[in-house]
Length: 69
Image: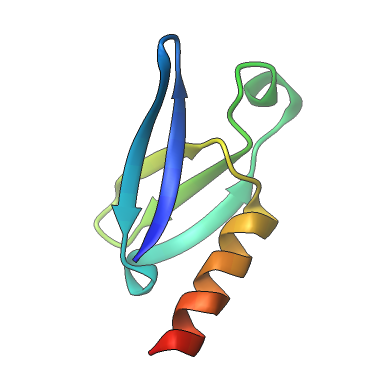
């Protein structure tokens, strides 16, 4: 499992997701970054998570999780 955070007005929301459920990670644009959203994670079931981590940080977490299995 990897940990993702979604910025909110009162702090953040934490999500734990299995790396094999991630279909795509996209770096956020400048307008999203202004609000603390640094990337978007799309899962195979179609859910989209707006994340405070960069796409590179999520990629690194996915790779680390793969090494541990």
